[in-house]
Image (tube, rainbow, N blue to C red; front, side, top):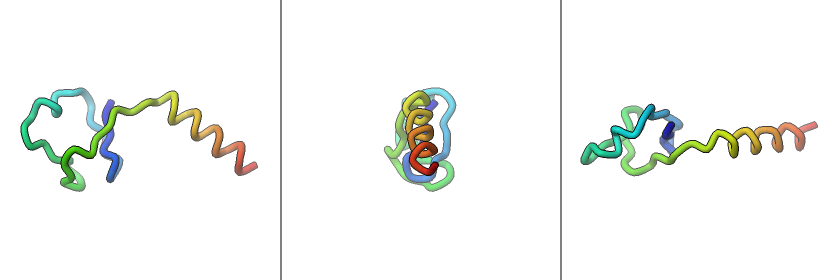
Length: 53
């Protein structure tokens, strides 16, 4: 799963990486996507919840 780091749009699969000039369909940014690391995101969310208690 890939995600635009500007607007958060999720890209399913890696086909878009092969397209020349691909832009995010929501914010139209180029080269702003990153591979999502769900374990890191869960760890950060748990840490934030613990800090808010």
